[in-house]
Length: 438
Image (cartoon, rainbow, N blue to C red):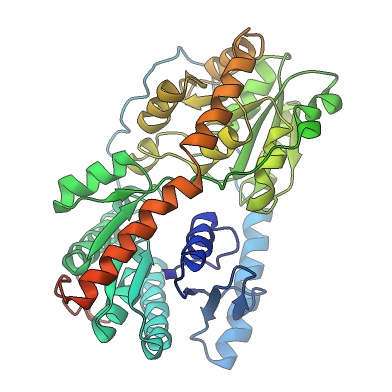
């Protein structure tokens, strides 16, 4: 497997590696080196993680100090967040408008693409001697290394597409979008099997490339709940019901709307649990507005079910600021269900469909803090709260759990191995990572 992060919090990749190892595969993951993470790790389940470092000794010292200082400065000088205004709710949430972007990338953005190609090249050199039978790329920024390794070793190539890559809000100019469009289009013919995270993204891939992608949802493993934890957060909030957001503190998550919703009602306590670049600005916003918001630190993904089960309501406040967000199905939705929580979620296609199927979700306008506040109070006071909580847990135990989801992935990989032995794979087309596509 290849993944362009340090694998510290990537629950999907860890779950796949653990399940595939249990199914009899030997799994090695090539990840991004990010101090203080170790260069090599062997996890108790039996799979290995290799974090490849392409830098010279001088570059290591410089690049370990500079990003750390840059992160410190970005926190110190982060622009203040604004409290979003109330508005008349509009549901379902409309498609995001087309963005007006500059035509050309900055030198820093071009430099990042060069850096990304260097990391992929390093992975290829590290993976090729191992001669894998199957190569899995987790997202587009790791696909070249997986494709090059598959070409070198006659391996099957799997593309696990977590995002609509060219529709993410962090792509900030047309040059970068064109680059990634061309990059994916040139690598796509070599892919033997496509995997993605939900049916909406599978449909996007079908329309774009004429392929049938397997939807493997980001569900947690089945686990027993600890009854003593059920709703115990109430004790810290004078018996009020608790609504929790668990995840990354990033732009586009609707966290400012949650702070505003805390000011618009007093019946439900608001808890934000996680980490990310917006943590300090969010804390400042809550302090300045005197919003009754409680913050909890990040936790290992294996402990999230127990942590979430202490609350009464799970909140999914995603803003549809790009097409990728509009069609998302965040893994925290499934974490809430495994924890036995009813959910208040933005009225987006995947979450709406899941909520209608399971009967466990109240939908609201993602851009309307007053609508969020109203739905939280209505759900907390609803006589159907316990019934919706039971429905969440039942659907998680029977349908939306990792054991069910990954069984289909294991079957797919076994079929690919049979095709590889019969040499019935797609022809691989070499793409030189040093040649610009524009």
